[in-house]
Every structure is written in C-alpha cells, then in structure tokens.
Length: 293
Image 1 (tube, rainbow, N blue to C red):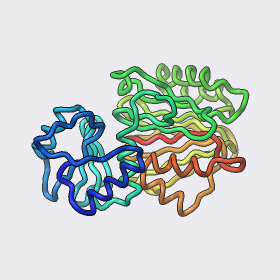
Image 2 (tube, helix red, strand yellow; image 1 turned 90 degrees about the horizontal axis):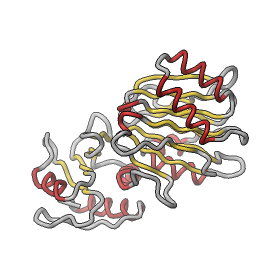
Image 3 (cartoon, rainbow, N blue to C red; image 1 turned 90 degrees about the vertical axis):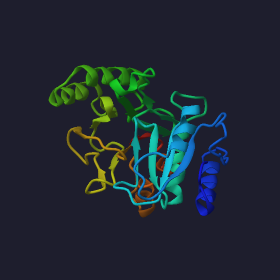
Image 4 (cartoon, helix red, strand yellow; image 1 turned 180 degrees about the vertical axis):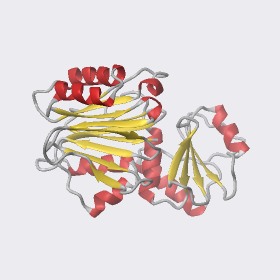
C-alpha cells in the first residue's frame, strides 16, 4: 500500500485479508520486495499516475490498483492491457475485495485455485468442477480470446466439446455458420461462453430450458439480462464487449434475488463466492463466471 490513509487503509487491509493476502504499507524509497499487487491513491483532478507509484511499479512488475478520489465514468476500469486498474475510492467493501482478489488471481491454473486472471478478462468456476476453460499460452491469450464449455448433460465430454467448439469459433467467421456448427456439435448437451480476440466481442451459445445464462453490465440497459431461452431451439448471441461486462453460465437455473443482483455489481470474485454458497442439490452445481477487465 502506498499513500493510503485512515479509513481507506483499514478497508484495504480488510479486503486483502478476505482475499487471503497480507497488506503492508510501502514508502516511496522502499523496495516492493515480493509484492503481488500495489495499491495507491489517485487524487482528485490527477490525470496521470503519480511518479512515485510508477517508480515502485517499475521495480517489481506487479498490477497496480489506483483508488480514485473522484467519480469515474464506470465504477472500475482497466488501462495498459490490464496492468492498471482504476476504482472509485468510495466503492462498497465487497467491490474493493473483488478487485483485489481478481488482481491476485494466477495467470495459469494452480492446485486448489478456481480462478484465473488474463490481461483482458478474469474467469472463475464453481461447483462440481465440470466446467473446462480454454487455456492459451502466455502472449497468445489476447489473440486467441477465451472459450469455455458449461456441460449440461452427463454424457458430454467437456474436453472434447471444448476443443471442437474452440476450433469452430476460431476458424469459422460468419455468425450464421458458427451457430449452425455449434448446434450440430452440441445440441442441448452444453453451453458456450466465448470472449473474442482482444476482448472485442462476446459469443454465447445456449440450449433452451437448460441451466442459466446471465449477462450483467453497469454500462448497459437493462443492466441484467437472462439470456437462456425458455423454449425452442438453442440461441446464439454475438455483441460487443466492454470493460466490466460479466457473464454467468450455470448447469441449473439461478433464482433472481435482490442479493444476487447487488452481488453482480461487485464483480466476478464476489459473484463466484455467492454462487459457490448457493451450490447444492436444488441450486447451480457447476458453472462459470467471466468478467471482461
């Protein structure tokens, strides 16, 4: 932590503890050591990162979270391909916790970790661990995007379905052809959530009357949409992506509650916590949360 005072310091310390991290105060002339994240203040009216923060960040190449003293166009946004995150300092504690946890997530799968951070998006899975993420080598993620499968049928092999669905989305350009080929491949056995190269577009494929597919964005109206079709043929959606967009795919329906809607505004990790708590015999048992950073 650098240049944090009073209540802000207390809130950051609490958020770090919730995220399983330890917060330490850092002066400008100190070496960051083995730091994983740098949290600092961006004062009202400032339009550039303070020199002392830049100097600290250069010594150890870690993400930077700037708590802004003024209202932003969005409550949170990222710069420099995810290296710098801006967050309103007056944000709710759950949103602060969610940002810190997201920035501390690993780039590659780790034992016991259910989430991953990429330069342009964050992903977390919950429940019975039958959701499979496309994993691309470092340096290729921005070009390949992300493809995920949410199995909705016990007979589907998620790894095979993931490989084939990712191939369709990578090599087939026309939306009509993508929809036709995904329908032939998956039918009603699985849903697909895809973030296109450079996180420019979302693509969703979802069967009717199966599981749940939610989309949330503070910058759109309506902010929350339930995209899973109630009946008929599987639906295929493609639309532009924006920082802060969040998608949830689950193997069972999700009840819409005021608490759940509030949690969506706090970001992916908070949503993952909420859905993990809900998972049980009559609630979502497996699924995926994806947020564009």
